[in-house]
Length: 284
Image (cartoon, rainbow, N blue to C red; front, side, top):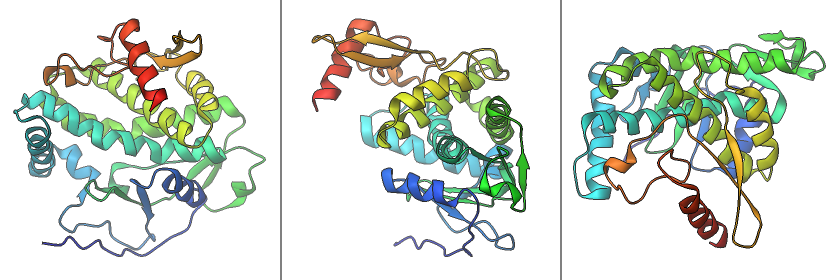
């Protein structure tokens, strides 16, 4: 059966240009802004964020997709907590970009309560309702409806942290019991999703170094509820070229499926293996 994408009422906001730029460099994700009167998509394949936060049947169906995908990709079943970890990652990674990309590109920080977002992961779509955003005093958008002016860059970074926490807190509450992890581990995962999502997009934009610098300032390691810091560092490649890496605050549990093939930023991956993986990626 062909899945028909809904055509919600379009809207334009102070962060629309940032979302258009995101899709230009990362076509796998498209953000659809909704008119204030338009309902969130509810057709098959879409799930509202507040449904995931409830932790009921909608979350069961969401994770069933991850369970089936693991079997398809790796020929084995994963533990339920591993499936839930994969599912959280597949939601939280793009959800964080809703907030971090407008901040990175235009110094505008939208707020997204769970009730304002719906997700279609097989098509790579997020439908959102933008109601307000924070910005700096010299931003041309500062006079727009919904703008909240903050005094400086550090205050804007605090807005980013608060906006992500506001959005992810109910999601973590919904996923938490399935993942067998406590609050600290869950917020460690949230920290990693913020960092690795914008780091990757920064690379696509040709601004990887700026992304690394700004993420280090955003998450210095002392900003609760987040756990750990951006934790970037450099390794020396075989030719002496610096290879940027970081140390994750959490583990995605992929090693439970492929113990010999850990992620390059995984705490389980030693520096020698990181150099080998990073060198191969650079060559490719």
